[in-house]
Image 1 (spheres, rainbow, N blue to C red):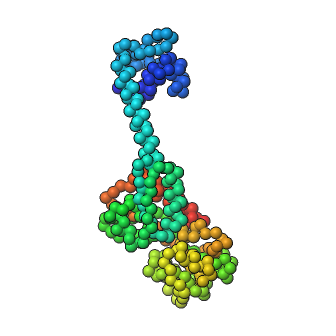
Image 2: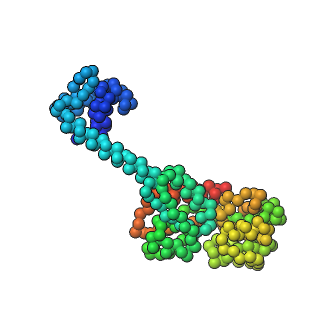
Image 3: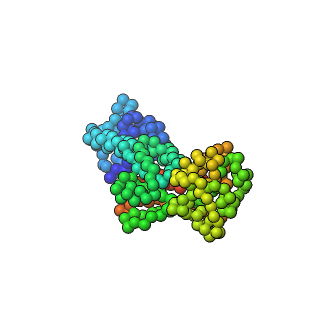
Length: 298
């Protein structure tokens, strides 16, 4: 059996017409090409080349072999082209979904990382409610769903993604904006925007208020983090959001203040148990973990 390297050497000598030229084509030392040729002629029991007009040309008995080698080389070239197209994502599509809190900033950063690796990959990205994740996955609308909470379903699996925490946000001119850290007791002194005890993140803060016996007033109810941020910018109250939602907020727009109490939470990526993730989806998860870990670390 000829190896791919031996095929390359034979073809290089045939194209270059000399051992020295073949060595330059392959970027190897000339003696290595000579040794390979002598070894092949010894093993095959035929002379592969003869000198004619100062060039190496295929011997009569080896012409059929060279025709076949040309076909093999072309097929190898086609294979390499297909591999390159696959690496770039040509003709492939990645379908994903995410809950809004992670979708606004983190997912676009992860998509940018995937796009750099696979520039021709088509990406379909849906923003879904937490309760819609099961249908998204079971109906095979996409490969994975990024979650802020682990759901239970016999046909789905949820793998840990990254840990995050909550922060207090205010308008830059708000009295709390100058503090390096706030406690739950500080937060309840002001009208609150958007805390919903039924929401995974809202439930964390509501639980802290309940344990400490703190009464709080929800001045404005708003479900999505982007809406909450827009309301806070108008200095209509303070809010508690996850670090991922506010990761790209400028300090002149919103003050982001750490919370003294433990507000850490775990995020997940959900997928079907009976389906393996594509390499593109795996790359997306890896990029998303990096983006989220960076945001949480800050």
